[in-house]
Image (cartoon, rainbow, N blue to C red):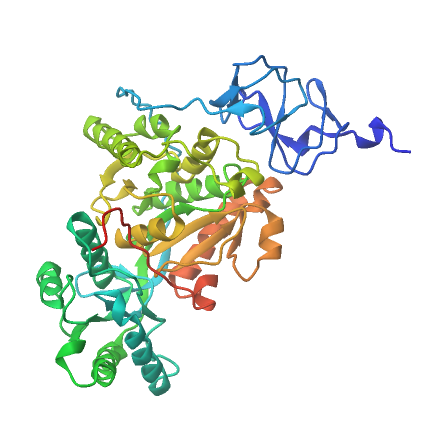
Length: 504
């Protein structure tokens, strides 16, 4: 017969993230009756799933629940030491808009500068790509199918793709029946793709009667390399597929001399993203991305954090890291403008986290946001970018964008991120049109979905950060030098464009 003593475990089976916390995270599933020998003995009063929280002390109704050193909500009822803390007994503290004051608190972790390089493509405009991709960019969604036929014929001619790494159609449903900001967003994001440094050749493919005409698109594009960017309007030729294949052949010939060369890490711009988060996201994978972001910035590189709704509840942490008062004001506008976007549709600002997040152990938006923003490390925020903008300053930038995985990852690509680092505890197979490196928060999902995952941050539960970070740095250098990510080997590359207006 099992006794309480049989279920006694070490305090290391629980993880307290900050000395101020009144909860700890279960590193493994906990059975009711298990006794933990912490500075004080704690008995689990009920079963607690892996990644979920256990009360380290008794709490009264209304008391704040502290995790990461910050409140993540308040108790809905009296809670006993050893109770499971989750959606049934905790509620967010967030409501409405807040007033903010500039109170800088910069405490960056500094890394040594190292003479590390990757093998990339130096473009004529001096930008650097980590891929030599051939893109077809439809100006309107109704010609996606014809672009597929072009690609099939082109691949029949060149099954090895020559010097191109991937061939991708940036399929989307827009480019017509759009007005105002939606129309501008579609055009802007597609232009961002055409100008992306990972693109070694681009065919811009239009129908001829859409709002987003090739003529207008070309004018908005500005100066371009006509040997690398070609244009085709389907209604202006007899056989658009044959005409398109001919233009792809021209791009293929132009790219024949392209080759990789050593490039310093200072030329890397990395997007920071999470999705399908769980209770370990803010403990393993997101802190790993934060450490890499700080390391990369110390090398002179750049990183970009987006997902504004998943900054709510942790925004003041980011505001305190603004490099100056102007950047602070820009962050305030970023946060409040996105809240106003929610309110303009009569939707609740704090309707987050998702069911999958909750299953994984995340309880409130503060819980999710404080974990999410771990991806940004400790560096100063140097700039705030509007949706569709490209990175302008070296260092850490915040980017306007939603939490939606495909839209946010596409926005990071639009900002000229050559690579997106994507942490997940639940798993997802998708990829943006730039390499999208999946970082597992736990070993179980890494082992289960090895065909989706690129790196196992679950190692951090057993190994020191400096060891795992060094392996992560080398993995990123390998990917930047041409090693395929799982989304690339699975031939999954997509674009998704933000939309909030009417459709004609």
